[in-house]
Image 1 (cartoon, rainbow, N blue to C red):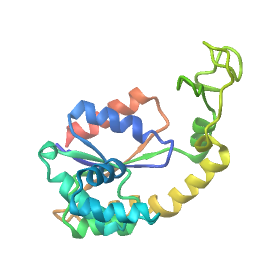
Image 2 (cartoon, rainbow, N blue to C red; image 1 turned 120 degrees about the vertical axis):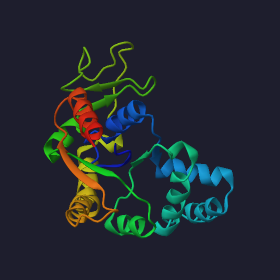
Image 3 (cartoon, helix red, strand yellow; image 1 turned 45 degrees about the vertical axis):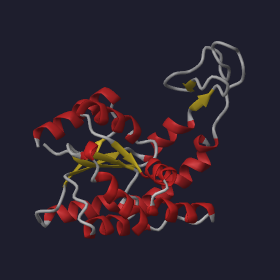
Image 4 (tube, rainbow, N blue to C red; image 1 turned 90 degrees about the vertical axis):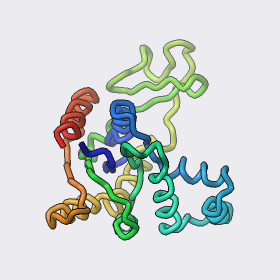
Length: 221
């Protein structure tokens, strides 16, 4: 069974929901680079100190430093049965660096959702700021448009859910991250021992349907 997994997909494709499902179903840790960086900084490790210096100066943490942190993280005991990489790699150079560092991956799953559906999903979200309650203009509308059901207070649109922001994030994804699908599918076609299996699925169905499909894909391996 494949347990060292990378999830690919545009913002709004449902990666977060599916990552949580896979983590809980197969009892493997979900590794986020953000969480990993924060932990390393808090622990005061040598790598954490290096990362902190870049972060405090407002610079991006270099890929090689991230790779070193990933390598250390996946070597920990809770990753013995596998792990799920969330939000990494984001670019082909990062994927190539992982390959060179011998951070082996068993399965890469791409969740594909058309841009128009993603824009509809994200731009329709409305938030009650005080409580964190989430609504959607189409899928979970409030009883009175624009108002929280319990307090009657106005709902807000987060900056990340503004249509212009979503379109910019999608553009970045298509330029930087989407090419990873071709990278991994091409690598698999060469059938080397280290090459992960690559699977692309339709992410437009219900969460439960996608849960079932992912379980089937992983359990078959």
